[in-house]
Length: 405
Image 1 (tube, rainbow, N blue to C red):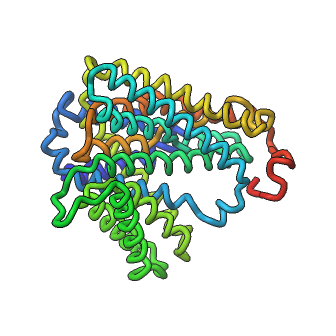
Image 2: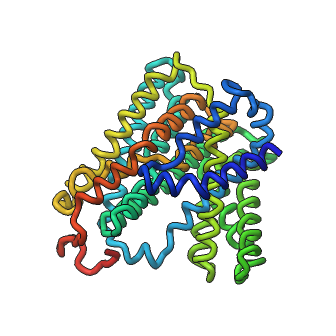
């Protein structure tokens, strides 16, 4: 009954509150649901106790996997091939710079603060780097809608957000594979590379089964059952082997978008379900949150500052290295400061893992970043997009034949 109540609350929020906030206040909805979760949790009314939240662990895994499918569904090959290659270079340099800066600094802080040894500190530091890389596209979409146009700058933000998500999920999966807990295999324990291959195989099997049963179905209800069944299968299998549900979900979404003949219907279905799941996950994450000011204040504050430096500095570095400062300007990294649901999913997925170390610090960093950035990310994105020309053309020497404007 509690889960049904939370789902209904998430649906109503997605149906009425989000669009109103986006249109009238240019605010990405999210922070208020974290606060609501805090009020409903043990530190508030006590409606969501730790025991009740533990009973909802399978739902968390399902929501995380569903978010992974939504990420993978964005990688439609015809659109990817029409996008100028230089946009991928810009996005990759920005992502790599942010991950290296935040991950390296986090490792140094955690190690030097005597929280963990140098080897163990690499796990939470990698997760903090992955969360720092993740960026939400919602702010850019709100800004483009409010301005009434969608130019090459908006496409750059779409590419950057998608590549950020892919790199962040890959970092999480590789980190959990390297630090995977022994499972008592009869012959030998799989290597980290084999664990990653197993996670990928789970996603492939989920995508194959979707087409085996209902790949050609046109009914929206049956499509929902098929997609939900595929997500349940992949997330359950990934959880069983102790790996993240995000990477198999991404591969499942990639297979769906590039093979199904009902791409528009499945995309609409994923979007409709994604929002309520996100808000329910935010409420539960707020209830699970138990920050400790004694050991996380300095690392979390450093994370917030370094992430901003990484996004803005990485975007500036990417534009400078590719000679595109006059085209996109020096500030387009500001439009990527919004965190969104993927940051929560990464932190929650890590917290549920048996291999997690310093999960409270990682969880606190993700939630604080969402609380801060959701308030102004849409306005920053609007300012970035509005400061650029209506029509943006790449220099001929950069992209002579590629389209995608």
